[in-house]
Amino acid sequence: MKQSKESREIGFIRASALADLANTSDEEIRNEYREAGQDMVAVAKQTHDALRNVVAAGMRTRLASAKAATQALSASRPTNRVRPAIERLKEIVAETFMREPKIAMAFRDGKKQTDEDLATVYDDLVGMGLIKPEDHDG
Amino acid sequence: MSANAGNSAHTNDETKGGHVTTGKSPDHGYATAEEISEAIESLTEAELGRIHRAAQYALFGTEYTDPLELLGEAVQRTLEGVGMKGGRHWPREVHFVAYIIRTMQSIADGSSSSIPQSRTAYLETMAGCDGDAELALAQEGFSSPDVVEQALEVEETNERQARAAADASLIEDHFANDEEIQFLIMGDKDGMKPDEIRAASGMTQTAYNTARRRFRRGLNTLMPGRRKA
Image 1 (cartoon, one colour):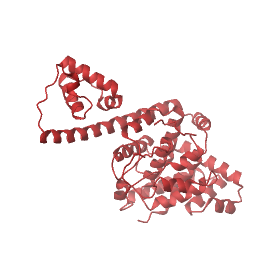
Image 2 (tube, chains in turn brown, cyan):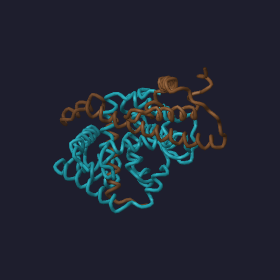
Image 3 (spheres, chains in turn blue, green):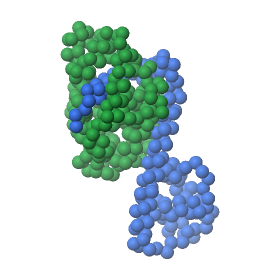
Image 4 (spheres, helix red, strand yellow):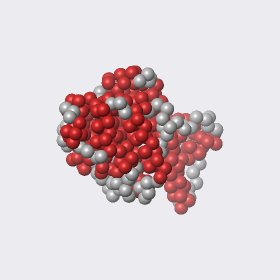
């Protein structure tokens, strides 16, 4: 594909600006924000929040894929798993989330989860191998 | 992996950031989704400010309307590439800030045919640092676009060309009264090397570097409010 002259020009401008940025110190960048009347602290926070949202969404997608794969596996190997009582189930899920904070972040969607939601989460975590029911028997 | 690992936050690290693979199998050299998440959590305020500024520069001439949209795309593609043969991969030995900036630039370039051109200019500009940028990029497998870009490159749409033309015009108008920057823009437009631009303009190396800095800082004031949706 042949690019337009303008696209090539913009590509070069991007490259030169980024190259110069690479040679600019953190302090200089901070000063530039200040001189431009921009609040770098606020920009940094906004950027961090946006990145965290992308990661959380990505993790949810990965978990959904893992769940689909687990369900496909379960369908081919039926089991007769019994869930623990709901209070014990909550404890196990909480312990697992403490152990796997990134997984917890992926499940977090800003709403309160019902007992049924938690039971599904429990099943997912068992399916992913992060909870081993036999460890919590009794 | 820490986002701070091996970070000078500027200079040579940036030259080693770009990375795309299509034919290499994922191996232990690439970060996992959890490591990507940890690196993002570890980003400092200064690094976030740098990344956002880089996203602003990369935004010109693209279909993206907000720097965070382009940044999000870069991270999303990296997450999607984990464990996959194709797509974006973050090599662990490359600083995350450098990697994500290079990835945004590559996405913005948007087609394989543009990558060798921009890479050449980029490396020439950076040649004063340590001269090993080409080697670093070659080692990191920066050679070809990912699957998404292969689909995008089939045709550079009229719309994209129009955006590039509009942004190029915006930039040229903004610097119309700065003769040295006019030389830079004309040189960039004609694909001239830095030493050719210096020779044509009569700028010393110092004057050239100062003009480059002035040019970039001028772009800072062009960005806010640009093409707000």
